Image (cartoon, rainbow, N blue to C red):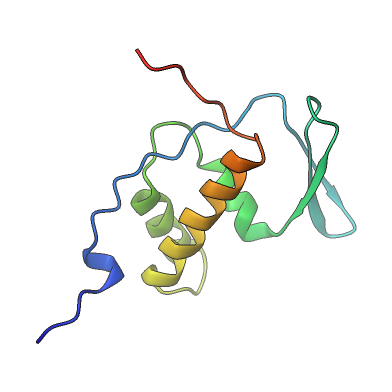
Length: 102
């Protein structure tokens, strides 16, 4: 019996585009995302910012995870898991644009 690897899953989920009005600044070695609509601030690490930069409404979670494996010392399974969690986090926090259904 073979076990399915995360790499074999069909990760074609397209990450929603990041909102253009979110302010990103470095503060004491951390990245701070400022949401002008809610007034909230989010402290994120470098990896989260790497995912954020790739949220353009075209890149899939698989493509983003593949880029993370090239940029960081991380296995694909972990990169994909982290990517999907961050994309959900960004969307739940309202930091991404939600395009209306056509």
